[in-house]
Structure formats: structure tokens, C-alpha cells
Image (cartoon, rainbow, N blue to C red):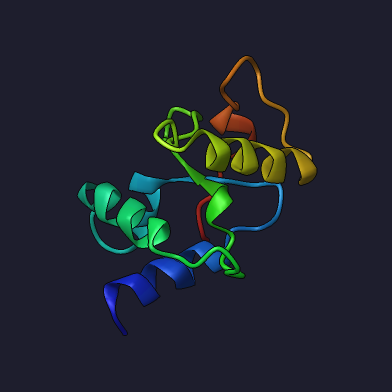
Length: 101
């Protein structure tokens, strides 16, 4: 299984209404230092993907798509549709964060 496929497999397990940080996905894959590579893998997904890329964000609870405002707005809307409530421009990771058992 390729690195990208492993990233997607982890992301597919994140339940609706919960999120993970890029580094947390990396940690599940063996190293939190893989956060940037996790981001690249998710950025390469096609627009019509079923992988819930929107559930992965910075470990601070902030969206990481400032370079693409439209996609950032889409990510926030998808998360809000799942019941996530932002506080200012951040969501509380203590409430919404998820790690696999």
C-alpha cells in the first residue's frame, strides 16, 4: 500500500463530527513529522473524492487552506454540516479531536 493510500485509509476512519490534525494522521502512520506529506496527499485528491479530507486540519484547530480561500470555506461548511461549532476561526480540538483506538 502506498503512502497516499495509507493516509486515505486513516482519514476514512475519522467519524463525522470529529477531526484529526495532520501530525496526528502522521503519528498513526508512524511519525508525527509526516504532517506535511499528509497535507500533500490530501491536496492531491480529486474534487469528487469520497475521502473526508475536510476532517483533517492543523492540530491547533485551525483550517490550513489559507492559500485557497474557496476550499477553506468549503472545508468549514462541511465541518459545520457535521455539527462542528467553530469558536472564532478555530475549533476546540479537545471537543472534536479523534484518534483511532
